[in-house]
Image 1 (cartoon, rainbow, N blue to C red):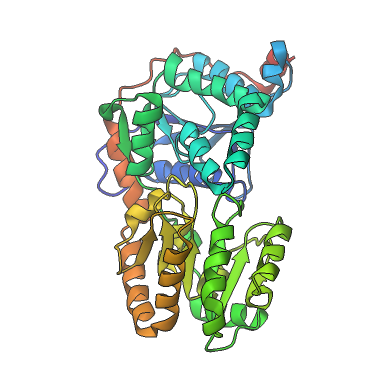
Image 2: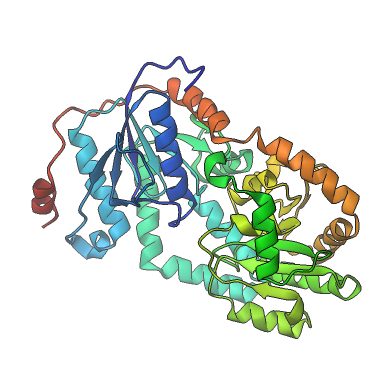
Length: 415
């Protein structure tokens, strides 16, 4: 990468899957692999699989098998089995640097795209208004074998071997201090980067086609909400906030996409009297036409370490409304590129800002220009330079060197 002075390294990225459709971490890992390769490093992937077209052919892919069982069923879950299999490989192979994502261990650097898991659990409870629902959900987490497994992985991550954490926001960095006791010199902040090549689209054509397809009039003001988990990302309070302003703003429309699990929210929209003002698009393969076809982006998430949809929306020129529970709120210039409403349940606050942006076309236009300018400082090139500066300071891995096992070796081990 231009400007980098790092010595060429042999770097391993350890993550179960890589693919833009599989989730934020899985998408980001592919972007990091391409960035490291562009910087001149030798990149290896320890994975269960990589979706076609996600990484160049010069990246070395080691697909790990995860068949088999272990005592008390802990090894039966694919995520744990994969992490254990990747640990066996890392004990054998020599890498200058091992970078892990999500639920893996034995790594020098941990790219915490998903944030600190205990923080995610605590913040996600806030989506339940009823305190008894919160307690029941919390009890379910405590009794869940899946959560026991995840807590075991966390002990391996932050007790047995403590990597340098690269947090995606200062909010998330604080969580690693608070929940895992990591000192400040063991946590760095690098915001998630925008992959401009993948985000780019002919917005004029895409806008016209999107609005025609979804019957949006020329004067319609469309608010976009996109997520895979509607409950966690705050669709319930957003529908309430929209319902409060919709009767006096007939030109406003709310566009919801990202998940097929929408039945409860359709019922909520009907109860609120806005069923004809909200369009549910379900899961969409490509959200870029939605960004192009809408006029502002609303995201009252209850927890996000640093949601990628915020820089994507800014890149598309959309003013952004998000909650203070989103690390990406740190990327907004209040009143210039968007607004931050501290509490996802502050329905009055959300209604006020939505109304302000719907009513003031000049403000939307001004914020749109500022949003696109701000997004240019959030590109993957910028973030990769920041990430490389962090990685450059880390000590090299001390894992001993033996040749990588073959697929047959892994089958024998997994049996």
